[in-house]
Image 1: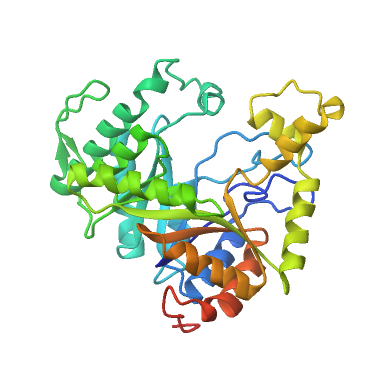
Image 2: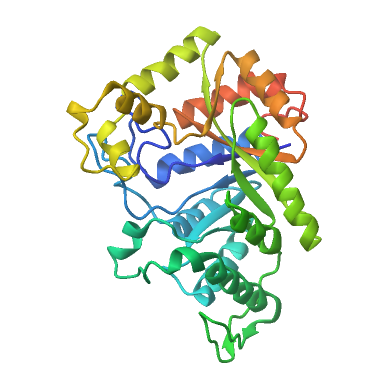
Length: 354
């Protein structure tokens, strides 16, 4: 059972609320987080790519760092933890990303992988003149398939003369080739997304639910697609951790975050940018508040409750690990490492500093 942390490369992490901890992204913040995660035995850290935020009073995700350069810096100040950077395939040519990956593979001594973002949010790309048009929604996984095929060929042989529907290369060189395998991870939730990951990926991130029923169904779907390709593709479930000394204290935090939801940012995110949140109905406000955690499953409670819930979810067939989000990342990882990990039965508790 692997643990990873979804580091806050953009401001305020993954809770769209005026009541949750507010912070700007920085190298120093993410260095603290990843070094703590490494200290407490987390297996990996992943940074997303987000190129435009949702505004609102919190200016949610309007401030962000760049994924590859951040992970390159983190590779130089860590020793054991695996580091995944994210690439939005419309923004960088695959040969350049292949070369960047070789560089970070060298810096990290083999602790690097890439998260493929096929590109669904038009506003992120149209602001830079990179959006290819509405047809891309139906083509994005075909585009990503050629993209990854080129990178894998360059890593394996050092050159590519790929000819496809989207890319044409003529004896493109990327040398030296990497000294280690570079994992590919994805976050496909749709049928086509899982097909893509089963063909090209090593792990697929799945949004977890508190009950675990949706996670079980998604794991089974991924396993079915992997069986078709004959590949071993792991399922990593994404969960938000909110802890307290008691269950009641943790649940009170969750409710306070919901009550303080940034309705303007949530309305923009949900495609209702023109919504008058001041005059919205109670039902609409409740709907927006419910999305302030991105619909990521929340594991909230005392340390014993959180440990028991993780053990229960870890037992769901196909779950190979969890990628965790914290309301307060620095304090949260330390608290999780000190007070939750020793209670887990789904893995041996790591020795601090080991």
